[in-house]
Length: 59
Image (cartoon, rainbow, N blue to C red):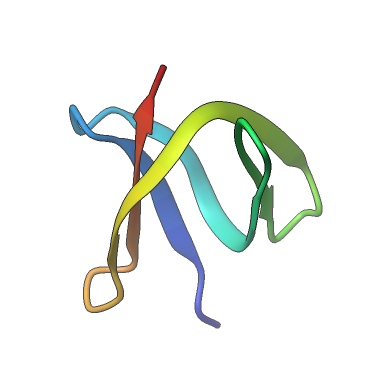
């Protein structure tokens, strides 16, 4: 599988095993392998596909 972990720009782990990111008008919605979703205010800043990490800058 190709899950990634979601982190803040400060390196804080926000969510594990993310399989879907949806860009919203004022943030993002992340869905994990168990189909749980969380919404975060902010924007995507970096995708590290080699290390399976997604970074967002939170408001």
